[in-house]
Each structure stands twice: as structure tokens, then as C-alpha cells.
Image (cartoon, rainbow, N blue to C red; front, side, top):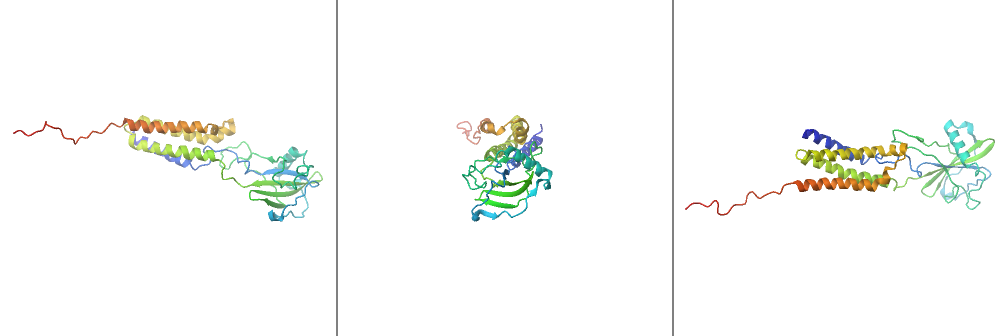
Amino acid sequence: MKSQLLLGVSLLVAVLLVGGMFSPAVFGDPYEPRSESPSYYIAHESTTDIEVDPVIVEDRPIEADPTPLEAFDDEQQRLFEAIYEEQRDEVYNSPADDEYESYLDLRSDREAYTRTVCEDWTLACDAYESAPTFPADGSYRYGSKSHFELTIVEYENETYEVVERHQSESLFQNVVEVLLRFGLFGPLALVISGVAVVARETRPKTVVALTGYGIGLGGLGVATPYLSMFTGTDVLAYATELGLVTWIVISATVLSLWWSDPPTADSDSSTSGTDSDPE
């Protein structure tokens, strides 16, 4: 491969790796975190007593007539029926044997209904592209992390309350993905570009091998969410091994170039006794 072409390809790979550092799709989880996706409860009107401290109330439920289930769109109807089927044995139960004051109590032991939702950046999705929501009749905020929306629904001549819970995003989510991208892509891009500039003519095979590794690592990062989605392969489970291999490749490349440089001799040193002037 000509040195200029090799330089161009290597620098392009380095630039793509730098761009990949800032893309959530690289080494990303294809599904929204559970804490970001809404969770749902259904309770019969005879069991609910949504009375909470007014300090945390945003908008108390209005005295509205229940909305017939048939008035919702098809997706909302299917969602209600799915929640009801999963929780039908509990819709007449109090939150936790009267231990807690309402379903808004975050300590409640009752398990919520959740749906798996794909991230917006996924090119393919084997779950739900977005989580449907119900038109809220009222809303509450519990502390600083949880927000609840309440909807009154009439179903089979009975009145139910749908509690839809939203949580604020955690700042510490996806830490492994971020560390992997910045800890591997950045140094590798720097070494690829540096080696391509200084050694493309003297060590072209090294440049080709290192650039090829960068292409492979970047391709694995892009493929990670889809490997998880369609094959169940969790690439991030091998994050430590992947980091070790990458840093071994980086270190071995730098050391091999360092040791291969011939020692420089002092060509300006003068010889003694050989160039003496004749008398």
C-alpha cells in the first residue's frame, strides 16, 4: 500500500474512533434503563387512597369521570390490558397490607409492570420503540427523583386507577460504556495517527496491523448493541479483557518502534593521531 494512501486510511480510522468516543451507540445498551422507562400499577378504586403530603403534590387528581377504556387508542388499550392481566390478583389489594399510606409510597413491595423500550438511536428494535403513556388526570412528585401520573379508567363497568411512575435519570448510568470508549478509543486513535505519520514508510506492516485493530475494535463497538439484542451476547461482560488486549497492543506497538530506532552516533567527534599535520 502506498504510504500516502496508508496515511489517509489510518488518519480516517483515528478520526472515526475519536467520533465514536462521543456516540452512545458505541458499546451501548440498546434498551432504555429501567429507571428511565415508566413503570405502571393498576388498582381498583375501592382500594386506593391517594392522600399524600401537600408539599409533594403538584396537581391533585381532579374529580373527573372515569374514561372508558374504549376511548383510548389501541396501544393504550393493549397496555392497560397487559398491566391488568399481570396485576389482576392484586388490583383489589391495599398497597402492602395497609402498611403504607398509598401506592405512591416508594417503599411499597408491590411489583410494577414495566416494558422494554429501545433507545432512540437503535437502527433495529426487537422491543417497543417508545413507551405509551396515558392522559393524566393528575400528577404527583415524590421527593426529587420520582414523578407519578394518575389516570382514572372505566373497565368492565368497574373503575380503576392507573399509576404511571417516572424516575429521573441517574448520572452514573452507562459508566462502563463511557469508560470503555474514552479509555480505549482515545489512546488508540492517538497511537494510530502518530505511528502512521512517523513510520508509514519504515514500518508499513505495523501501521496496517494497528489500523486494522482500530477498525476491528470500532466495528465491535458499533455491533455491541445488536449482538446483545439478537444473540444475547454481552460484550461489556468482557470489558476488562478488551481493555487489557487493547493496551497491550498499544504498548507493544510503541515499544517496538522505540527499540527499533538505531542508536545515533556522534559523527562530529574527532579522531586522534590520524589527521596530524606533517612537519
